[in-house]
Image 1 (cartoon, rainbow, N blue to C red):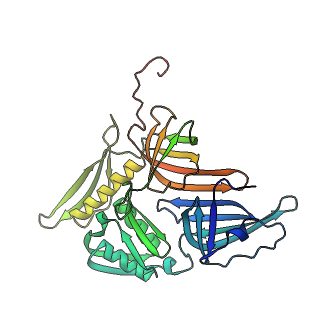
Image 2 (cartoon, rainbow, N blue to C red; image 1 turned 90 degrees about the vertical axis):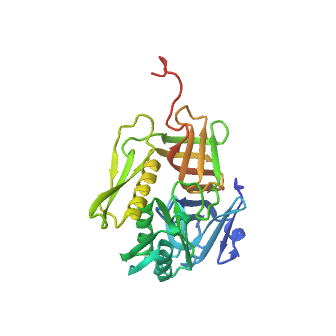
Length: 347
């Protein structure tokens, strides 16, 4: 039986696709927005138990439709079977080597440094070759930065949550990108993919707006030593037409005005991102990437519109075709807005 999409698997730089082909039954690749590592899984028919177990930590690259969809290391092997169901072998890989110093807690501080310098030091201590930081974050300077018994993963996520970014480790490099911008840390635009009813849209399950995560303002306070007064930095948030005023008041004071502004902007990005979302499934499209843009059309008025892609799962099956599932957030444009005139049918 032929695969619906061409694929190739390289292990430690060697193309092993032809050797895998008689046994490989499923491929899954997951690209996340920074909340977790990129992952991949390969499922093999292991009827006679003759397959060799892959080496733990071996380098894996997966190509789908001629494009590299995943690169990482073998992290886990699982075997399962039953008397009537045969035997299967499942090989899982992560976007970075989880056996290394990335899981080692760090305790250090850096005075009067930029965020890029501080995070670069943390990455070096974790055995990584470097870090890429979005230009809007890279030059942020503070009098004091610290890691308090945190791994590079926890430290990166803490800073990302504070600033409205997304952090992940890919291979031997760390990346801190600006969340919701639709661009790479270097400023290049991420791909836009479409889902159109009757063309390539298989299914959708979307909430175009949610009330609880939305605020109209984000506020952070700091103590101004020059005036000996507490001051507040306020950032406006787009919350939709007619939204009642509600402020996201950050409970912990910040060191100065710049830190307060950065944290308030981070809460703004979080509020806008969590204002709605769901899932869309389309025909296989290898260009879909986390933090890219998805344009939905033909579902219905008020749901059609633009969404931010928070996660991508490519699924290929030897017997069941190929699909791309999208985790969606941050409704934009007409999403959540039914602009039709009210009538008896519409309510």
